[in-house]
Length: 65
Image (cartoon, rainbow, N blue to C red):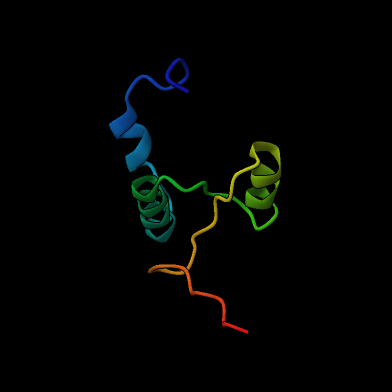
């Protein structure tokens, strides 16, 4: 993309929909991928890593038997 876009500020300010621009900024800050519902699971399968957000906080302990 760096070779395709000379002026990133101008490129990003051309966003037609502010809601989309906000969503892109949010995902950029979290480092999570942005795409359609099928896209992220496909990336997870290819990378072998979980890329979707998890529940916040420590993992729950399993109940003792």
